[in-house]
Image (cartoon, rainbow, N blue to C red; front, side, top):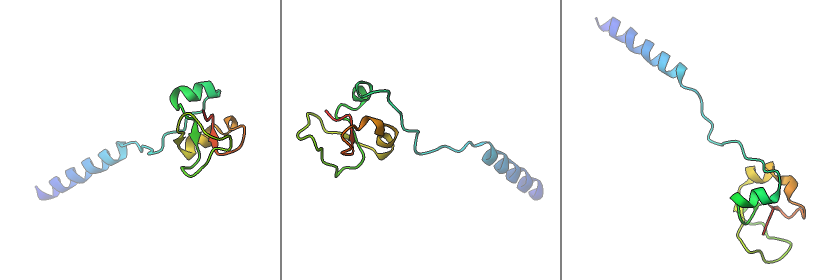
Length: 87
């Protein structure tokens, strides 16, 4: 009886582990078509890092910091200062 319980338990564990699908902690960064679309979600734009300073001077909103989102929307950083679509 003990052997059957052990076999049943190990089979159950193997089946439950194999049916679990792996999840990623980092969701794919969303790519926006233009700055208007990006600014609807992130009012101040998206910065590559927290220590980036805006070349253009004072901005109205603080940018959201995310390297993944910045990298996906790097085309929107026209002045190449590390902040895409700053306002």
